[in-house]
Image (cartoon, rainbow, N blue to C red; front, side):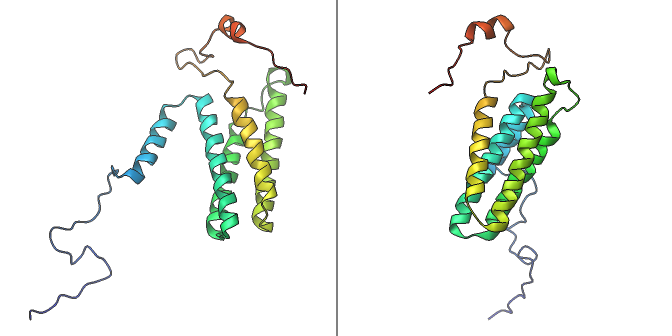
Length: 179
């Protein structure tokens, strides 16, 4: 029997010539397709769409954290709560607090307080290992994401809403908030 070759910890060092080290180039495997799609979506998004993507990412993270809490998977729960926390931090950083009150400054300040509140609730959920704060944050993010869908996209050429004021007025339908 021929001498058997000693294998080291690196599986590619003593491998047959047909096996090569993995490429550092992006893969076309299905698991990586989602990442590539998301990257393309982020790179081609206007500022309004980016906020929608952040809301979506935060919602997905909180939903996953709730599932991991029920599964008692501490590591994954914590990772997803941290992800949602970091997204909320990015949302806070994206706000423009220099605006005057009548130009949206008050909305910016209120959103900053709401995002900070949600961060606090995420920390409570993680430290106390309870679901109620996660449910509350999930509901708040859902409401914000739905409201954000009503914001018109920004035209890359003019940096103004993509629809005209006349078109927006024609599409406006008042809603009743009474029950």
